[in-house]
Length: 369
Image 1 (cartoon, rainbow, N blue to C red):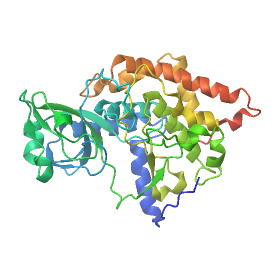
Image 2: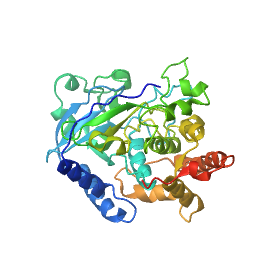
Image 3: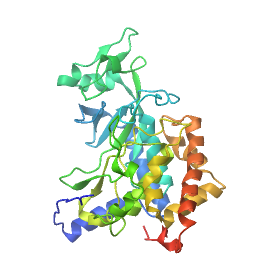
Image 4: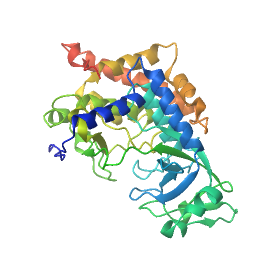
């Protein structure tokens, strides 16, 4: 592996301190969670109630996404509903051609928060009226893609690299449409971020496998490569793998960190639209960072054990956490059952790492994050 070479910008101690206060207020450590939950829930309430003032299509990506600007100047990323809750990924479909699911984005935010990671962007469901909320604000090329289907439903498809055409249009019923609204982070000008290629990135090829899929000793090279050779980053990647495995997300190719925090920054957990696609299939390879490196953060293991032993299972905690979302129920029940089943798998893999270890503290690491 070649070490990443991020650019570095100098920040005043005061700017770093101020952003740190904002970040930890929204995402507090255990013991202050109630206060942080109030702040986030208030934010999500605004996102579901504020009038929409402007819309535009977000550039890039394989599927349609809209940037929503509210009447107060705040912004969110809108991913529209394509599938009913119980429609699963087609058996012959690759992970990189799967449709994104709006409810997966919502559920991922709640799962991330329950696991104590606090690294996912606040996301909530909202129903919009295509005719009243979107069409009057659309301009240019986006406006040209609006039409009425033979069923008289109002539809649009935008422009993107995969599923932006009449055959894959987003349609209302007849004009009402569910979607996920993910709160925008401060822009790169205010809070620059570093973009990293995920070391366990898949090949995104129909034929070729990634290096880590064919080399059981792959983690040894990762551990020699900055920033994974010291500090928290490798443990963060394992946390990310646990999150992705629990929701069945195979589409983790890059991640971002906050530049001003250097290698003390946790990765931001972004873009989970391809999670929760298979309720009855558990893709074990998502856990490769765990079973190849055999390390896990102590706090992560403690959280998993708490949901394993009860009294509240992870599935029940998710139902309770998502109960206030306007699009509840967010998940199809089999996906909730899959969370408990996959949690047991994560613990089983961790036990396999611990069994041959001469020093358990080299496997379960308390780095106080």
